[in-house]
Image (tube, rainbow, N blue to C red; front, top):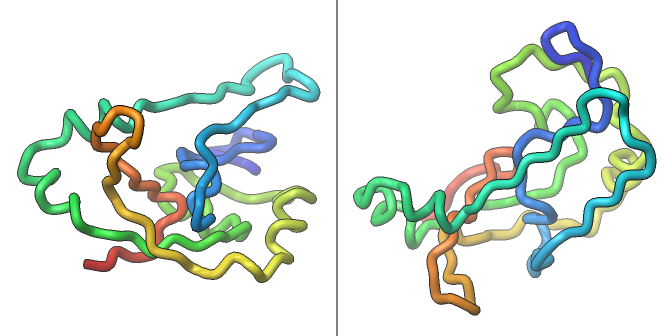
Length: 135
């Protein structure tokens, strides 16, 4: 992709892994095949702490909402909320292979759920994957 005139490879915006699955995984393992000489940053965010920091009125408004989540390998969907000018040069073979699959129907996921181990609330919002919110 070309982002604001700078060529990048393998970029995905903030997202939750496999949110479009009815039973999302509990974690992920990232493995570097070949480290770039520059870039290659991966960020992580604590969604329990993020939920805790929301204003109480917003917590109350979203606690019982669900989002329709669907899989997309279409770069115009994946990057639609980016505040940068993004031009996709090649969306890669893995994205093309996944995009050819048709067995990922849209599903509803809660915007907030309880972590079973701790009983704490987790923000489960993902702008890269959400299509619309349902009440």
